[in-house]
Image (cartoon, rainbow, N blue to C red):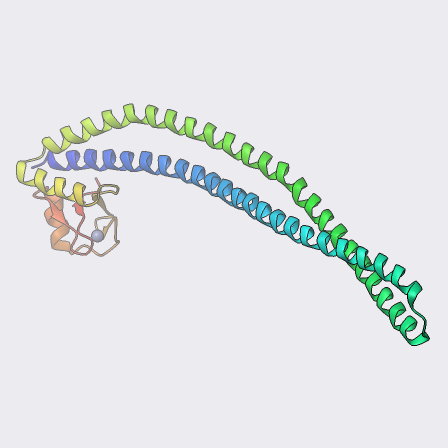
Length: 236
Ligand SMILES: [Zn+2]
């Protein structure tokens, strides 16, 4: 079974290579996802901006009606005052008129400040839209780059998969089955591992009993680590 360990090393390196490519593509996709997230947040901002403007516009419409009514009341009261004779009625009417005029000033101020708020909100829109456009362009570019990367890597991965397959086929049937099931159970990770310094499992760093080490040194069989279940292969 001497030829088993080189095959296992070959399988190990093919699986690692597959994993490296998978991670590279995953990291690239994560960068795209971050941009998509940014786009969503800005789109939400745009939506909130629209809702706020609608609210302020509605409020101003109501205030304009109130202002119109108040102005008419002031005019009417001014006219009516000429008919008043006794001082207490005149004084009372003056107070009411003063209150109405103050109300009118307050309404005008509120309307004005709402208009300013509207202007600020409107000024924000092109900025947000421009930002979204920029993000969309960069997402498109990154997606294109990702697709190219995928296409390039796919050639590499196909070759890698063929070499993996041929190494697995080279194993004795029963061991090939063991390796295949390990590959299927851990499709993205490493399935084999080396003993470091002949004493530890290279994956979980558990101590390897001397008897197991001796057996491995004799190249006798596929032995799994009792702790992590990976196949142990000698370091040399
Ligand atoms: Zn282990």
